[in-house]
Length: 334
Image (cartoon, rainbow, N blue to C red; front, top):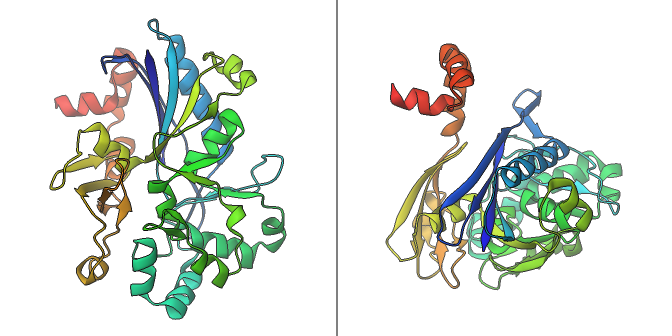
């Protein structure tokens, strides 16, 4: 039995195939461009991401020769939402978490509900980056687009939907919306009713590791994957990094660096108190049942390395193309 791990990042995606012993058998990566659409405004084209996903899945499958691939699961960056209509078409590029749009809407929610109540309900310190504030921005600034929306998806459920026509999101990624009740593990109607947003605009919420369905046969044929491949919910990328590092006991943590650098400690219970609120720490359902994590993160992690590469590593880029190595492995060696 082999499994595919698909990771959707802010600046690129990667597909890794593992055999039954956990060894990496095949790997593919593709970057995409973050769009700077105005002062401090950043968006990502979901169709570009989908094309990159198909590319890395096809390449990793093409390079793989081994046991049958049984299932695919997704780790994804959080917060950024994609408005999709009933035909599955993307209505607008995804506004990224670093984009200030949603700031006014977030301030209104804080004024109405208070920081402590929002934290107790959703496990997060209210911030414009969270999905609910971006959705309110769409509603108030692009009302005609908003009227056409069937679902507001994050990238996990969007890619699952494109692969198999069934949008589903796990608890850990749903908690990055600031509209998810982390105790009851369901959408937070207290907030949604207050801002007049229908719960049905979100995907079905299920635990990490849930088999959603099998891959669409036409998509499987296009990419070169088995027609009976199972599609499985994964989680927020930081949660998946912790699982992959074997962090399953309270007191353990992982330090992971993608676009964002993040330290992720694990708890045996939800931890929500004044210290967490004052220091902007979230409380997030973990992939392991009845456990929770928090995040201590810095937006400029791998993104800063990428900036360094693009501005100061021109000779290493040339060397990488000639040698077949990655630019980063060459920089590491120096």
